[in-house]
Image (cartoon, rainbow, N blue to C red):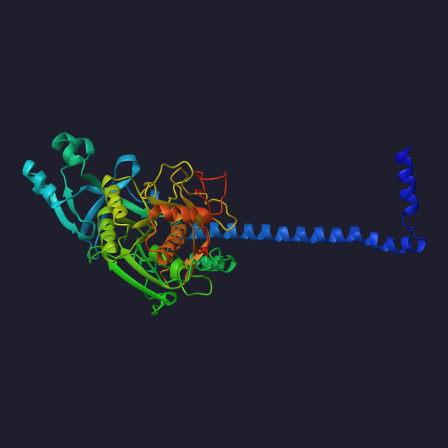
Length: 473
């Protein structure tokens, strides 16, 4: 009864609505469905435009890949490849070795001290006969000895049997390492056709900037081991207080240099161009040129030349080094990286473009190296990116506008293009606080990374996306 009384009282107290008020409301009620339908149509049209744009970009990327390359670069290289200089003289021969990787034929590297080398020579005098070169890595406090062994000793097992495990513990093949970008353009080697360049230019116009802000505006020092950088590119004009590039070549003087990949990496870091936002607008870049043209479409570097480049970068007091390259695990490379960590140098490396089921690639897979994978602008993983527990972070690196060695702008994809983004972030942290350790930098990066995929660290995105601008603490 109480409930009924309350309801009746409520009805009595409600304001009366006149017929005229109801008549006025009817047109408003009639407008609602049409307004909702109009909004739905607008939203549908927007979604269709986005879908068409994505499809157009995918088609352009496919066209660029078809026109810029005749075959997959890895499969295009023969099992035995002679590297010749400008006069046609053979410098070394590259062959396939264990696990499908490549190395200089019968060449082995020893990383040790002078006293250790003399001890080995006293024990096995024949090593002097195999010695091809010896160089001091002064900044690293090490000696690098290059041996060329007979064919019957050209394996770890055979070396161990001949010289026991003592020598084998110092030795690693003179492996070959490759950059990790899908398309590398290099005018000096005539790598692209005019059709490919036109397609690339069209793609640049339709591509939105993914790295649309500077990582920081602090004066930054950064090193890289890569191909040479085309210093005459109009977007890399060196200016005091903005950009300075110090470049050193570690290849034989008679061997042609290659410029495509290094110019693309430098472009992401420092280019002044309408289609590119530089990650580091105040940069001193130290470029160690270690890559030679393996064929029309591929660049390669021997481990010996990479190590010489790293030694030079350390001698220049560089504390952050970008390595947009990958290859096999190698005990000599591992030892150098361990030494770099002791000297407070931080290395950032491309995770690799081997695909989701590929084995880990190095140096990215070493524990003390920051490994970075590539994402597109929709934060989707690059389809050829390596995956694994060694992935530390992700960065934009798919369909990225950057510089081409022929003086233009082109679009590149790959973990090579993501690595300089993370390198820029690390360099900014070091510029703000030079005493930060690797562990502290990991903490800072992880704290501001955008978690993607499974919560926390995962094998696809690592600790998440690092994008500009860097949050200052």
